[in-house]
Structure formats: structure tokens, C-alpha cells
Length: 171
Ligand SMILES: Cc1cc2nc3c(=O)[nH]c(=O)nc-3n(C[C@H](O)[C@H](O)[C@H](O)COP(=O)(O)OP(=O)(O)OC[C@H]3O[C@@H](n4cnc5c(N)ncnc54)[C@H](O)[C@@H]3O)c2cc1C
Image (cartoon, rainbow, N blue to C red; front, side, top):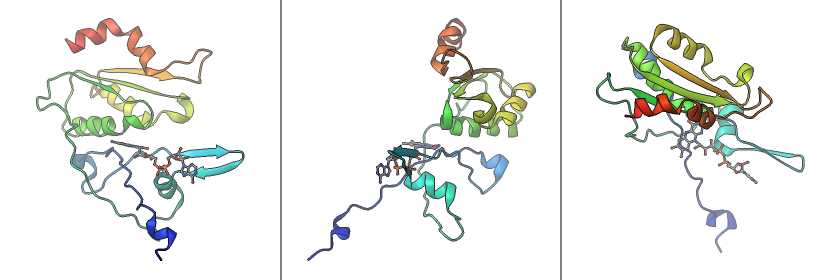
């Protein structure tokens, strides 16, 4: 008789966006992973893959990884304006885009919307982003912190506030 464990499906792969440019990091790949955590009546469970990446020593517990080709990439013409909306770990591919443009020395119209609960603890890649803003790699930056003020502000609120300018960029 087949053991019950054998009848379970294999673990599904988890996808992570590459958060780095080869022009900056060579043959490495950098990821931006949020640890999934669930508290049910005091029993804490972590996501299988994000918990593994966060808490296990990878040298002793290696993971098998594959690169799935993506068609989500920067416009071919570097002069094309780019609007990037990446709250939370959604920043990952846009950090790669900005790192890539910085490595190529490109300035131009690039606009990033980023948000998370608290600026002090959750501004992912904050120092890099501010340096790119100062250097002109990023020409416009709109930030939303949902737990810093009395009203919850998310990136969609910033987009609405700046909708006239955003529309001009889209056109
Ligand atoms: C195209 C794409 C790109 C992505 N890019 C990124 C990225 O750049 N960064 C990033 O952080 N994520 C990204 N993700 C999400 C990522 O793929 C995973 O879904 C995420 O990390 C959670 O996987 P996990 O294995 O940690 O959690 P899982 O183990 O899959 O858990 C998912 C949910 O199930 C609950 N759960 C797990 N085990 C149990 C249990 N035994 N009992 C009850 N509940 C349980 C967990 O608490 C959680 O709520 C991306 C997804 C896609 C589709």
C-alpha cells in the first residue's frame, strides 16, 4: 500500500523577483524577500520558502533554484519615461532597474512609488534610493507610510494626489 506521504504533491516552487543588475553585482543574484509569518492562537508558522531563506543556514540547507526568464524589463529606449509602482517587496524588480540604470550612468525620467508601514524600519533600499534620487538616476520619488501618521496612506493615495502629473507621464 502506498504510504500517505507518497500521495502528497511535491512542494510547489516559489517565485522571487531578481532585485539586482548583473552590471552591478556580476554573477550573483540579490533578492528582496519578506518573511511570511502567521500567528494562529499563539502558534507561529513561517512560510516554507521565506522562512527557510530567513532562518536556515543556506550552506547546510541548500535550495535548488532556477531562473525563469522574464519579459518584465526596462524599455529598450533609455529615454522612455518609466513609472514604477512597487510597494513592499514589490520594489525588487525596480531596485534592479534603478541599479542597472545607475551602472549605465543614465539619468532621465524615472518615477518610483514606494510604500510600507513605517519609514524608519521599512524603507527597503532606502539609502540607495535616496542616493539615486540625489544623483538624478531617479527623477521623482513618491513615498507612502501607512502606519506613520494618523491616516493610513498607501501608494494609491499618492498616485491619486499626483494624478495630473502621472497622467502627463502616461501620455
Ligand atoms: C511573479 C512573482 C514574484 C514574486 N516576487 C517576490 C519577491 O520578490 N519577494 C517576495 O518576498 N515574494 C515574492 N513573491 C511571493 C513568493 O513567491 C511567495 O509566495 C512568498 O514568499 C511566500 O512563500 P512561502 O513559501 O514563504 O510561504 P508559504 O509556505 O507558501 O505560505 C503561504 C501562506 O500559507 C500559510 N501557511 C504555511 N504553512 C501553513 C500551515 N502548516 N498551516 C497553516 N497555514 C500555513 C502561511 O502562513 C502563509 O500565509 C512573488 C510571487 C510571484 C508570483
